[in-house]
Image (tube, rainbow, N blue to C red; front, side, top):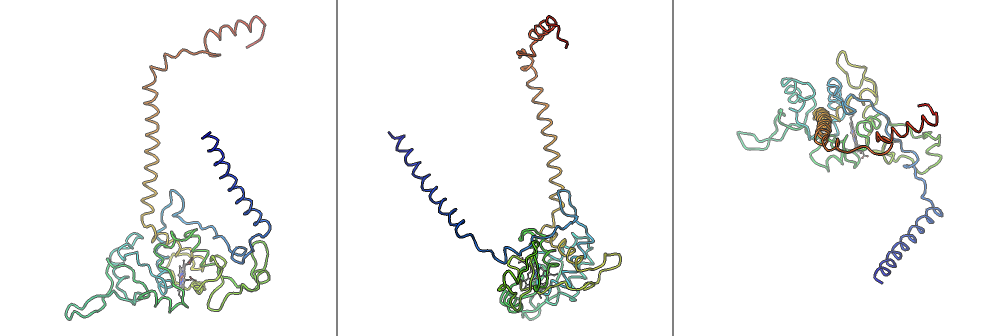
Length: 318
Ligand code: HEC
């Protein structure tokens, strides 16, 4: 009796679920979701080959240094890097004296660190030291928005972790600005013909790699040689500068990436050796017990002999 009641309740639940499923499916078929410009014209990030990719990846220190230069000369005007300390720059191959000169130069770090005048106790500013974090270009969010058409430039310290696609996305975004007039997607459809109302509003810039196609950041890297690289570096094309700053932002988000890769390798090696030892000790422990199991079936010596006899009787080879 109880069992029947339980079954009835079960059938009731399944019935309700089926009705709900039918409703959803029939609505999807009768009124399919409308196509949107964001859906049809958004582009997935382009592939980006970086030395730090993959399980064995290492940083290309020279590239990170160029990336820091691009950040310093271009991006730092609007974006903070507040989770990185100047002292951390030792990780991309700078000596202490070089970092001190960079942090205290005042060339780019116009905002000095808030401090207190030791003689008067009045608020003051001082030059950054190795222990200081990179400053934010704005005193607070309100100031940041006021300077950027009400959009807030995010802090870039962790941006490669915070966006799907990571460095590849940043690279595509920086190099992906396009002219919206006549813009076509991979299928050859023209954006403004298909969605005449999707025109980029004034104050925003069209970029198909940005999720809603228009963003408030003007193209930061626009001409070759915008950042003058030192001798022996590759040509500072827009693509190269975008790659370098993306590689640099992988480092800011995970400065210990190489340690992680190295530890991972050691752990895998250790597990392989442990597996081998485990297998060998298993063999060793069970060797005695297994030897006592007499073979039966086709492999049984008696059976084998019988088969051989039967075959030779019937004059079958083998
Ligand atoms: C003139 C100021 C300005 C400069 C210079 C600038 N940005 Fe931006 N950036 C912005 C603003 C404003 C936003 C917010 C855009 C939005 O939300 O529409 C933004 C957003 C971003 C985003 C986030 C996009 C997202 O998915 O939300 C990234 C990444 C970025 N900028 C990288 C850079 C890099 C790298 C540089 C240097 C090469 C740079 N920016 C230079 C103003 C700037």
